Image (cartoon, rainbow, N blue to C red; front, side, top):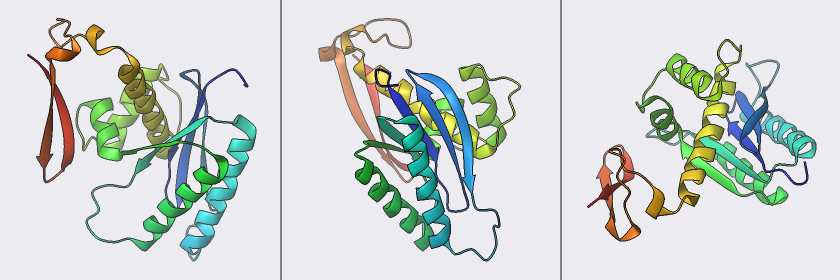
Length: 196
């Protein structure tokens, strides 16, 4: 895989984490990392196991970058999630991997058209977009596949010259005709590009 572009996509969680490997934009494989027992295992031990398992994935697949979903919608401090986030950053830095992080609402909206889509709606949208209809996967695997697909699609669109980007109506706009408007709401910050 030395000449191919490999992306490791993660739906990282404290109890279970889904992962997906994409090679040159195509889905290669998926899996779940989890602790055998869910109760009475401290968050630190679970996260340590996650990092060890991620090390094995890096050794096996040699990814060039990582995309993962950030927990969102939580309005209070969650120490286990903060620890998870810190350990993921340290892990990526240790392996020299660039990380692309997205909120789960951002990914769900891109995949389904609604930021609060159900797990089933997301899984179905991923099945359709990746041609995986009928495949049995866990929620965490579908989430990881969605993150990977979103990351690949987003970066492919960003690398397309703006002069060739069609609008919804099909009209092509030059970079001088595109105005970026920042949107601020209680749900977050976003951008909308309008053709003038």
